[in-house]
Length: 538
Image (cartoon, rainbow, N blue to C red; front, side, top):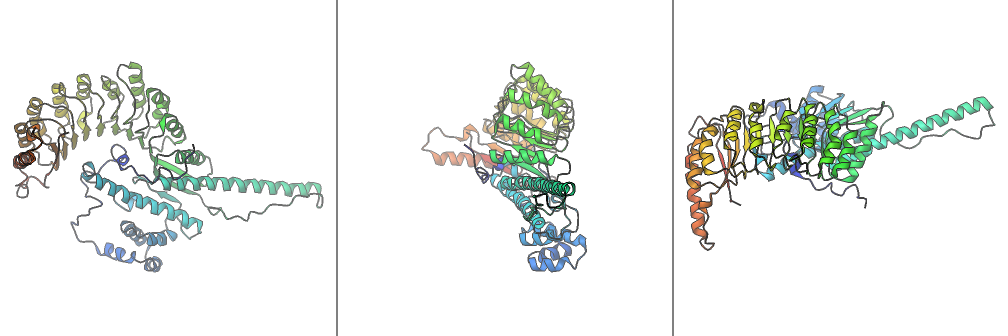
């Protein structure tokens, strides 16, 4: 049954904006929780005051140099003043507007890694930016405002699917109007020619007049570059058509996709959409939750090989299986071998067991981000990871939900190689034993750039966790530690809740002391206070 255009578009899956496609600025300040470190400049204060009132903004546009209009647009975007944004865009004096040059990235700080509510806030803020600019741009053109803007770049910020549908529909509308106008023009030419050949009075056909209002003025050619997130069949269909017509020469409304996320649509639709994308333009590709099987990947492998400028690839949460399938492992190796700019890779929740070496052999460019969550990694895979030539460049590594209890030696080698550069390390539910962590703790203390460590779900004894914390105290850069309460803190008798709560409190106090959190404000070696996040053991 066909779905309506709006079905599925109102539900924003905030988790889809995390991971490989949108890298976090780990040193940045939280965009939705601004912390003022310095007083605003006079320019910023004046622009912020002006854009609060749309009438004042209109009056100021004609009185200030063009450079100040850029600062006013920046202030209007940050303050979510839509009417002032419309006033500025209606008289924009430049040929292009690049959103990433006006406002800082919303994907900043460590908060999105452990605060789901904050992740939702920053995605909503990014959607506000792109929604306001995309809709206002087309409205200004439709109203024939004196704007000079012809190129709108929204990349780096998420675009709501309803806005993507709106843009693709307009792209097709402009294309169809252009075809209609050309056909009428050809018809009128034929009528005129017939009159010349047969003489007046013998031709009973009259020229046609176009009295319908066009979506865009006839002499305007525009281009919108964006990040597309597709979860509905209707939007998928419109995007396929819009990208097809955008590739035609002389097209008046061109859509360019910089990052593409396709979710819950299946292998056939994924393959169809990838064929319409301009290969040299695509920088990020996310295909999670599409139930992609080996046959689907084999079909799309040639298309993946053509994406030569791809920097981020997310194939997580599918049914790709390399285990006991040498041919499939070789195909994936070949598909990755042409991606010479790849920096971020996520293969989580696919069966990679014993074949990680093939995946890594296909990667020639140093990776900065690698997620292998729940891939069934074995001792062979960890050994392959340890021998990966550019492993020392990894800044974000996630090996969560793999049983690493037998992988002490290769894990030690992996940690030793990444120690100089790793900033985010996740080892949740990895079955790391007390003996292993006691031997690995020294390696953790060498990670002097480590900002975020997640070791939730590992069942250590109280004394083991505290001993590990004493080594982590030496990591002056560490800002977030996530750890579970040890099994020792839980009482088998459910009626003794008070005893259990007291045991947990004693453990937490001891852990805080071992980490040196109490003295961190006096400690000049730790620039920021360490955040300790403790969760129940599942």
